[in-house]
Image (cartoon, rainbow, N blue to C red; front, side):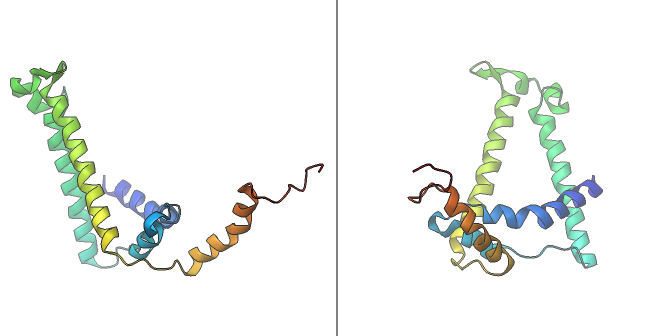
Length: 155
């Protein structure tokens, strides 16, 4: 469990995070606000490792506990008959719980990201990422279908 979480976290923070931020839409300065929130990620101290290990463990164990209440084969669903009862649209309580908790979780994550982005100052994108964006401008201006005739046209 832990080695796989470390691998995925490393891959995300090393290869995905910055590129993801750079590809966000520019409406309301979203991409620049998100870029301003980027920070380096590392597990350098014993405290960092303990916090990471506890966080992964709590996430794993809480996921297993919630699954016991929200899946047909879950232990609590098998023990508590009310979770198996059909209430709305021929859906059992455990299935309604599963989807409701998923929507609540997604809403909380979106709200936290939204608040963080709202509180962040719109800043210019600088450094290596700015170089990548500037280097790609000629490509995007050619492929945007501007008013210039194509060099391959017979006009």
